[in-house]
Image (cartoon, rainbow, N blue to C red; front, side, top):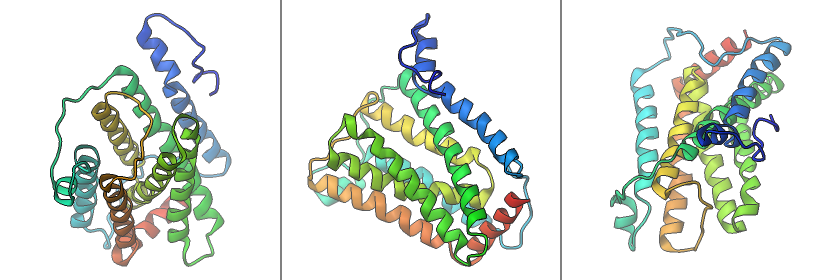
Length: 255
């Protein structure tokens, strides 16, 4: 995986070189390794659980969850900027998008690699806390915290305040990404959503750039919304019939 993600490799044409240096090939390798790891642990790798008709499943819940994901991704990239609260919350800024091949590969790498890592973390947690009545809560929260902490690796390229904000935001979004998988049983859904969020971010910013934290009103409001809303959604999804669907999928994951 280190070899496949090495930036020292130079190939022609340039697109192939970017494909390797972006880490995408390492992400694919990690996905394949996860299948082997899960099998060695005695489980079938389940990136796509077969559809199971459950009396606790509600289509409206699934639609609302997807709607939140779409609206949240839109707001996080096109809003959260302005000089007052109304502009920050409700005024989108549609500057021309600037997608690049490098940002596409990096976003795809994040979607594949980081969600594969989430799957293995979730599997370890639901097995490790099998006897706890808070297994769902522990699994979702701890896997999200691990996901957030991974973003401290960005500290070398940006200041501490910006990195800390990114870590907390990633952990909050990680709650939703974990639930999206556990509620649907479809790992490709959080993979696709993760890719979309990152790629849209890169396209809006004109490429892969360091995060910036200036402590402005816009920074504080966007952070509070970006953290508070996913946490609220996660709490809602871990109650009632929604939690029962997650429990059913967990049992199916364990075979």
